[in-house]
Length: 298
Image (tube, rainbow, N blue to C red; front, side):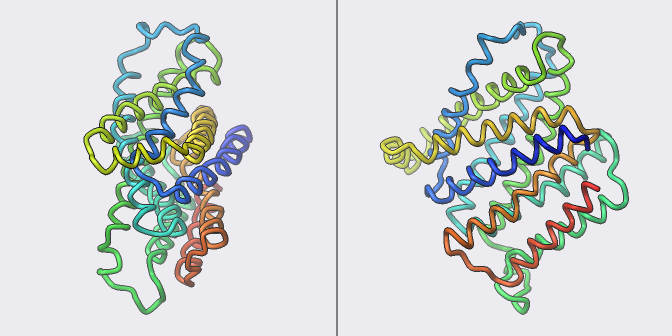
């Protein structure tokens, strides 16, 4: 991983942890993430009129990858919304962030995308998986299949699948977009994010309109939109940094792995500010995930 990618992702992890904390504190829902999407769309819209790109000349592959990204982003956002309502951020956030490291590496190798992770990185991913297994336990004696058959774990899996899908789709779309000669790398990445935010806003808007309690939640949140707007801005800036960083690595799984630096931040915020349980298995799980992360990016 290049130094440029390191700096970009390092900055993004703080913003990512911050917007997740705000969404958990704001009682998240599809409506909450809809307003986040609106905020992200508004602050990235400037890239559309300022860009020299002719949208009609963009390759068809870009639009296919973008459509795939929309699909998986919906899974991710709804998984987050309902996961945070079902369990602590100090559980959902680290598990939802760590599991895609394994899935993205597996899918990348299966599809032959990018450079194959080395043995040290693969060992790190196994340790990350072990950390994820420990995270839901209240104590070391409570290990059983029932511990993992819960709504919270289902939503974690939804988050993981969504993250895996949109990360791979976005990385491929970004490569196609960066091959177009017009505009700077940064401008193209912001334009890319504008399309992502717009598609997500439209998708979540349709979902919210179809679900009665989500419509009621939208009416409530829109009267005090502070948390979702700030979270949307943080999310958009964080992901622009990630999209730019994707152009400086040989395998997208390295980007996803290094982004896990936000894990201890999310757990710390949940335990300290939201008074969540600092169970020993949870803390050991986080420690293993961070250790696995270090091995993954060596």
